Image (cartoon, rainbow, N blue to C red; front, side, top):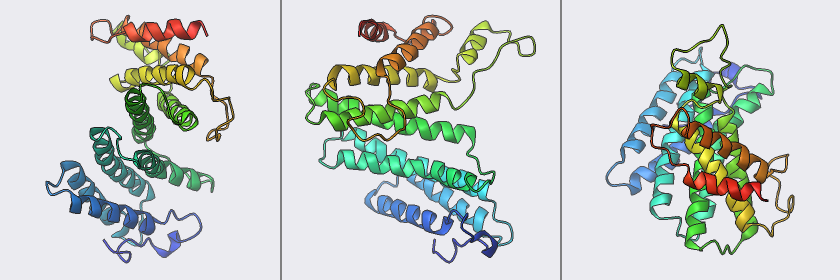
Length: 289
């Protein structure tokens, strides 16, 4: 996949052009390196390779009709597949290498690329939106990766953290992404115009719970709030680099998400086997803070 093949039409080369050629070529080089190192040709990498080929065919075959929304969708999917492969390797290695945190931060930056592309173009007053399911997945993947990193490192160090400030920042970023994931879709307002035969489904949708992943995100978010308050108490609010504009209230957020988790797991999902024991213990801790 050469730069020549990845060129958008000339009328797309203005300042609002998301520079598909540079971004896609960089992603292709990353994929090529992973494929070269993986003698078994992992299905995720093969899928990503096919997606990148589709990106070239869809967005750059017809120089008179560059469908940027289709490009963004395919570009996002290729990123999700490639980074998921790399995330699995980090998890399998239990983030044991010295550069594990650096790799986590690098993957988060890559997963942020589609969102950045959309924001850059929307700033130019163009309609350039991510699909809701893709946006949700991008938030989830960043939050879940930070959760797994913090959980694994915390357990390994027996929560005697060597770098509380960095750990605190990872927790704050992870909670931020999980909250964004949970807020991607608006809760369904159940009224006379919208009704459900299944009251359990109606209850879940009214609380903004659209899948098992949403339930898991609630628990992950609550656990990260607990870790921040339990093991990073020496880090003063605002003393670490503020990635996000608002200082996060871990107590408030943790109580809210875990209250929701317990209510749905012991309510409409009571027959699905979700465990609430740990959530209740954390809630008891948070409510006494």
